[in-house]
Length: 122
Image (cartoon, rainbow, N blue to C red; front, side):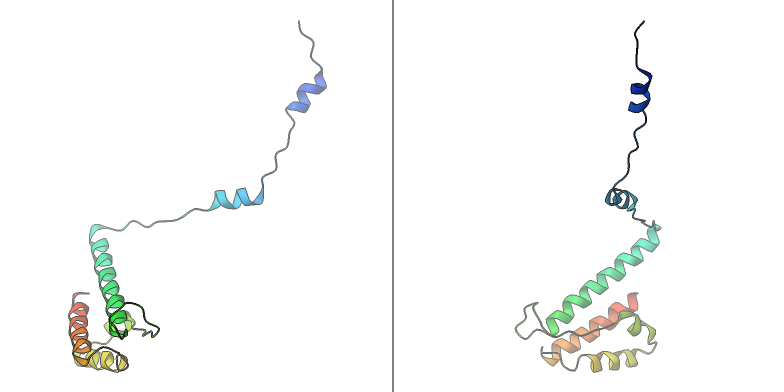
Protein backbone atom coordinates (compact mmCIF):
# COMPACT_ATOMS: atom_id res chain seq x y z
CA UNK A 1 0.00 0.00 0.00
CA UNK A 2 1.30 3.34 -1.00
CA UNK A 3 1.58 6.11 1.52
CA UNK A 4 0.35 9.51 0.51
CA UNK A 5 0.58 12.54 2.57
CA UNK A 6 -2.92 13.73 3.35
CA UNK A 7 -1.95 17.41 3.04
CA UNK A 8 -0.71 17.12 -0.53
CA UNK A 9 -3.87 15.61 -2.05
CA UNK A 10 -6.16 18.12 -0.42
CA UNK A 11 -3.94 21.04 -1.41
CA UNK A 12 -3.90 19.95 -5.05
CA UNK A 13 -7.67 19.80 -5.14
CA UNK A 14 -8.19 23.09 -3.34
CA UNK A 15 -7.23 25.56 -6.02
CA UNK A 16 -9.32 28.63 -6.49
CA UNK A 17 -9.43 29.97 -10.02
CA UNK A 18 -10.41 33.58 -10.51
CA UNK A 19 -11.77 34.67 -13.86
CA UNK A 20 -10.31 37.65 -15.59
CA UNK A 21 -13.03 40.32 -16.07
CA UNK A 22 -12.20 40.60 -19.78
CA UNK A 23 -12.82 36.86 -20.24
CA UNK A 24 -16.19 37.13 -18.52
CA UNK A 25 -17.26 40.13 -20.61
CA UNK A 26 -16.15 38.45 -23.81
CA UNK A 27 -17.92 35.24 -22.93
CA UNK A 28 -21.14 37.11 -22.09
CA UNK A 29 -21.29 38.93 -25.44
CA UNK A 30 -24.27 37.42 -27.16
CA UNK A 31 -26.03 38.68 -30.22
CA UNK A 32 -29.73 38.29 -30.64
CA UNK A 33 -30.92 37.78 -34.17
CA UNK A 34 -34.55 37.91 -35.06
CA UNK A 35 -36.11 35.48 -37.45
CA UNK A 36 -38.61 36.92 -39.84
CA UNK A 37 -41.10 35.17 -42.05
CA UNK A 38 -40.56 34.99 -45.78
CA UNK A 39 -43.05 37.78 -46.52
CA UNK A 40 -41.53 40.08 -43.88
CA UNK A 41 -38.02 39.45 -45.24
CA UNK A 42 -39.20 40.32 -48.76
CA UNK A 43 -40.54 43.64 -47.45
CA UNK A 44 -37.28 44.33 -45.60
CA UNK A 45 -35.23 43.56 -48.71
CA UNK A 46 -37.44 45.82 -50.84
CA UNK A 47 -37.08 48.66 -48.35
CA UNK A 48 -33.31 48.17 -48.22
CA UNK A 49 -33.08 48.25 -52.02
CA UNK A 50 -35.02 51.52 -52.14
CA UNK A 51 -32.86 53.07 -49.40
CA UNK A 52 -29.66 52.00 -51.19
CA UNK A 53 -30.97 53.46 -54.44
CA UNK A 54 -31.86 56.70 -52.61
CA UNK A 55 -28.39 56.97 -51.11
CA UNK A 56 -26.61 56.38 -54.42
CA UNK A 57 -28.92 58.70 -56.35
CA UNK A 58 -28.57 61.52 -53.83
CA UNK A 59 -24.80 61.23 -53.93
CA UNK A 60 -24.96 61.51 -57.70
CA UNK A 61 -27.30 64.53 -57.59
CA UNK A 62 -25.05 66.39 -55.18
CA UNK A 63 -21.76 65.68 -56.94
CA UNK A 64 -20.68 68.21 -59.51
CA UNK A 65 -18.63 65.89 -61.75
CA UNK A 66 -20.73 62.73 -61.49
CA UNK A 67 -18.39 61.05 -59.02
CA UNK A 68 -19.72 59.60 -55.79
CA UNK A 69 -17.47 61.82 -53.66
CA UNK A 70 -19.40 64.79 -52.31
CA UNK A 71 -19.07 67.12 -49.37
CA UNK A 72 -22.71 68.18 -49.43
CA UNK A 73 -25.26 66.07 -47.69
CA UNK A 74 -29.00 66.01 -47.90
CA UNK A 75 -31.12 64.17 -45.39
CA UNK A 76 -34.10 62.56 -47.08
CA UNK A 77 -36.06 60.62 -44.50
CA UNK A 78 -38.03 58.00 -46.36
CA UNK A 79 -40.50 57.57 -43.51
CA UNK A 80 -41.37 61.28 -43.52
CA UNK A 81 -41.94 61.15 -47.25
CA UNK A 82 -44.11 58.03 -46.93
CA UNK A 83 -46.19 59.73 -44.22
CA UNK A 84 -47.21 62.37 -46.76
CA UNK A 85 -50.33 60.92 -48.37
CA UNK A 86 -50.83 63.23 -51.34
CA UNK A 87 -48.46 62.62 -54.27
CA UNK A 88 -48.34 66.30 -55.24
CA UNK A 89 -47.30 67.15 -51.68
CA UNK A 90 -44.62 64.46 -51.86
CA UNK A 91 -43.37 65.98 -55.11
CA UNK A 92 -43.29 69.44 -53.53
CA UNK A 93 -41.46 68.01 -50.49
CA UNK A 94 -38.79 66.48 -52.74
CA UNK A 95 -38.46 69.59 -54.91
CA UNK A 96 -37.91 71.75 -51.83
CA UNK A 97 -35.37 69.32 -50.46
CA UNK A 98 -33.39 69.09 -53.70
CA UNK A 99 -33.10 72.81 -54.45
CA UNK A 100 -29.31 72.81 -53.98
CA UNK A 101 -28.60 69.75 -56.14
CA UNK A 102 -25.57 70.26 -58.41
CA UNK A 103 -26.80 68.09 -61.28
CA UNK A 104 -29.00 69.45 -64.11
CA UNK A 105 -32.68 69.99 -63.39
CA UNK A 106 -33.71 67.16 -65.72
CA UNK A 107 -31.68 64.70 -63.55
CA UNK A 108 -33.41 66.02 -60.45
CA UNK A 109 -36.84 65.70 -62.08
CA UNK A 110 -36.06 62.12 -63.17
CA UNK A 111 -34.99 61.32 -59.60
CA UNK A 112 -38.26 62.75 -58.24
CA UNK A 113 -40.35 60.71 -60.68
CA UNK A 114 -38.40 57.52 -59.88
CA UNK A 115 -38.54 58.22 -56.16
CA UNK A 116 -42.31 58.68 -56.21
CA UNK A 117 -42.69 55.46 -58.18
CA UNK A 118 -40.51 53.53 -55.72
CA UNK A 119 -42.42 55.01 -52.78
CA UNK A 120 -45.64 53.52 -54.16
CA UNK A 121 -44.10 50.04 -53.97
CA UNK A 122 -43.43 50.29 -50.24
